[in-house]
Length: 282
Length: 321
Image 1 (cartoon, each protein chain N blue to C red):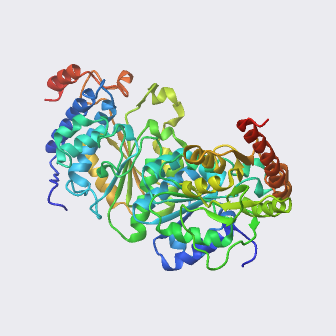
Image 2: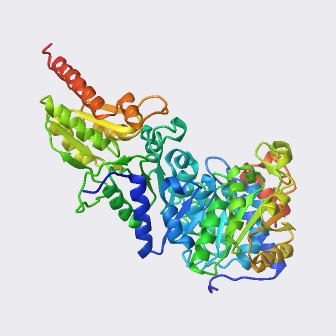
Image 3: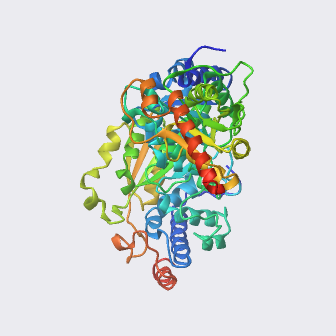
């Protein structure tokens, strides 16, 4: 493990990192010029999972994005990328002030991930449904080389309306990709409404993954210990890929944003963000 | 000279050959290996062959991930089906700068009886809008072997466009594939026929017909359509002043479009674009080439007519008529 990353099993410490991820997500999206922009609410639903991964289980090196033996993390729901930029800032992979360059002309922090500018993000995503296939390719590549790094991929539940996700779900188990762990950030809200309203038969989602041959683990995505246990179970599972369906609350941490369809893809004003941070996240 | 061979077949042979020595080469199939000629690679190297089923979008993403982990993926399907997943190629391959070799076979009306739904007719236009996508269409078996050899080491994404039908060999064993370089196959002073892939043979035969009518005709083979060889095109336009582009692809956005863009900026010249107008259809390949105006005979007729009209335009411009 690289010396530059401090990993911890302390759930309280990880919860505090998740809190800071939420703070930074609000700060960076509210400061985008000429007007607040980005997806803080989806970053906040996944903050606890990202804290558990990037500060406890994921092997990566904040000082060396190209470390060959690193685990790969692909954010298939590319619009949620503020959560990664926040994690990188907290880990020291990027200067904390750099978060205020989000979406700025020439910035490494593009509105959606771009590994050419910022290699830590691993894959360019933002057209939904594509990251999971890239992650499978990475997992196959590692298997072919006998490498022991793992590949993680986070999807949104709305994203799984894309047909490509089910092509991928059908394909991955064929090659026994037990070095692959998909995580569905099941926050139940997409742009124009609830998942239940948009496509009522997407759910039940769990038996669909199971039917395609994945090892399925269902967790509360805000219970960090449960997420850590699920990641360990995935790593110990042999012969098939794992999908963790993590039940989450969109906008988690700010009551006004929680479960609110109004706050999909919207960032608060700087004043609003500061007020919420002071009231709920300090 | 070798015998007639489809460029898809030459590709399949090259892949097997290269796979023997290069362990990084992998191939992905969407259940068309018997048609796109990757089946032999799969038999020779089963551990480096991924059967993805009839699911091209996922297949392209998987290829990108394999490239990111240091492999050299060739992902092949019918041109219309694979470049139809344009968003996946644009994002997962192009924007990710993945070293994926996208291979599209069954291009143009030259596939014959299967008809429009199976004909790759828009693939060049689509692929050359992706900034870093090399677009290569070889004209013969030997040129295909050279292109595939080259693609193993090419840095960045690439699209290789291949025929279903057999094509006569035009080159010798000393052929050397030079990425990005067009090649003058025949010198001429009055008109230049600029062709790619299957239409190179047609253009050479058309040049014979035109020479028979006393028209000095150059023929240029453009195997790399993106980036296109602007230097050569400007030079040939300067020498012949009349350009005809010929391709088995939509008349819009393909070789003709690329040539016009290059010449408009560097050496404006009248260009006649020959390619497919409207939708394709079932039929005998030779008859379809005649019907869609890209057979040797049709090229010669249209080129002669173009020379006359271009001559008229020049005379009007000079105030002579």
